[in-house]
Length: 451
Image (cartoon, rainbow, N blue to C red; front, top):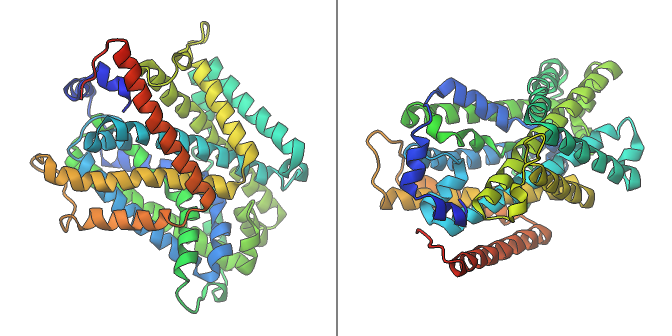
């Protein structure tokens, strides 16, 4: 996964270490985890952005994203059914293309996806709170609130992992309540004429909307991270992940139909809290307030979860020696990776303070799509270069799924703006330069590199 990981452990040693773990995760457990991860805070905001771009045809973008996720997950499942190392997509990319691509995947995942996604969630949270306190939506109050938010989350996680975990899991159920309330209560108030669309939307608009919407779909593959603990992966992984994907698509489609059917053209202007608008139309002020509270708690919970997990990725990379050693520092009293926590919190704050939700969401989506492209290509490579285990899952149609998945991902990436393209290109260039500089540094210190 990192240059130093290769110095420390060979693939056989990594596999041997993973074999020490107990395989206890079955289809229901894996599927539930995938749904819980996928249904994040993004879905509370993106329906309005999609409606603003596509109007009544917004529902088409959901099927485009569903197809893209289905194709990519099929490639994930094919690799995951016979690559049993822990680490999820980053480990799969390294397995297929080697340490450089594995390191780039780590950068795209940990920084481009996780850090940026948390920054976007913080912006969405302030947008929701600004409904009650308009001053939080702009200027110094917005920046100071973001600083207080990330400082508080960092402090909680520095004090102890238990405290950080409690904050992260406290809203697991809460994030589903506003969604189900909006769907169940709103279905009886749907007007069908706002859902009628005369023709297929232009490809450029569809791609733009799908790229934003993908922010709500990304992350379902994170459930595969504990691959070494999945029972009978050749059977469990396909059943659980396809079932979870179908569940997420149905939930999201229902939410978009209800939101657009209740609010009509007004949905496009509800970019801060569309679900609150639905609840307000259906139940009144009390319902709108209840949903707003649920949305704020849910977004905060997702943000807290990111603040819990992301610093650990930086800490482990620093432990390997790939990142500056200071990031591996452990607090003498609380025994937490406090330097990594503070660093990640600072990165998230800077991104949230300098960008709007739309650009941050697209940048996060584009980052994870780069990994998805590597997964699709990796599945194609491993299919023909690595001997398959008996009973391992193989995507139907030979290379068709991998090729189609790659095409769809590239098409989505092609709708990134110049700002996102420059950001991603810069990240790739800096990461490649750092990778080879690190290799040179290790050689100068007389360390050998296992390939």
